[in-house]
Amino acid sequence: MHNKNRIKNLFITIFIALCCLPRYSTAQTVTFSEGDIFEYATYYIGNFNIQTGESDVQMFRYKLSSEDGYENDVFVKLWFRISMISPALGIDADKTLIILETDPFQLRADLWIDSRDLSTSTTTLYDNSIPPNSVNISAQIIEKINPGEFEQLLAAILTTGKLADGEYTFRVIVTSSESETGTFVTPDEVEKTFIVRTPSALSLESPGSSALADSSENEIFTTYPVFNWSSQTCTGCDYYLRVAEFKSSYHSTLDEAIEDETTYPFNQSEGWKLVEGGVSTFQYPASGVYPLEMGGLYVWQVKESRPTTSGNEDIISEIYLFKIAVLGREVESFGETQELGPLLQSLKQALGDGQFTALFGSNGDLEGYSPTGRFTLNGETVDETSATGIITQIINGNIPDIDVQVEE
Image (cartoon, rainbow, N blue to C red; front, side):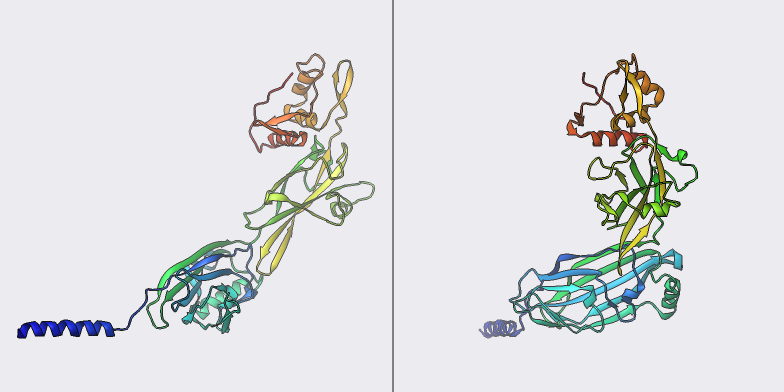
């Protein structure tokens, strides 16, 4: 009986002890529910203060959200790191530029966090509640590049004001807990690596060249030329194009011509026309522009608009000149001459004079044939401009030969 009482008392003691223990809720799960890390083509050092972590440009923006709601206490900490690899500076392994970490702060509603908020000078943010709650936040630098390496980095960029070429990695981690002094777990993190390169000049490829002396070397055989240029890979870059007539009796330089009245864009107040899709090729359109004429001399130029941490920055290409050959009435058919349209002009250039004349000239298999305006590409109806563009791309070697069917 005595042993039974001892066991009973022991169970009661354990039960009371368990009941008296402090109760902890499960850890709160806080994630980056929306947002992104933003990429720029060029990073200017003037937008950053590596000594304090301050930045006046938006590097990232994320919304912190608790998957479990806000009925129970939710505390979070943020950790942000910028690192780099730059062989140009002799940094061949991942090197920390700065690490910032906040003290724990309480979430009562979703909260947007901006990279511009993470610095040693930020003290208060406001959440998405209505009305918004003030959120007290404090950040400290827990690691940064040592002064000697920082001076080396600074010296390398003083002449341009830009970050040195290399790989830059941005990493943001959120940790959460049910109390300010509890254990913080890591439910979410984001990371992006960007390649920073010194912008290279735009290179115009075709048609034409920058030589003004002998325009016959820059002769093409279509009034709907395809303009091609090249540039290094650039995220978020836009290209703009302009074309103008070179009048020998009026213009003495290519610059004078390109700054004069443009044939493209048609609206002179625009100055440049955006090339849709960010591609590096463009065919002169058949409508909405001043038509190009056979025998005419024309100049063209491309502008690249690059997003940087100090706004958009423009890179202007050199100017190319080309001449459109005079084809006129060249094919004799049915005892009379036949005017060549844009499609036949391009086809003549693709086939060569001999083969074209053998097919479309007198006694040729296609004598008397002319485009009807009905074209199909892979079963889809296309217009004459598109068909001409395909032939021009074949001439330039941009696409392989394709099968063509002619309906009688």
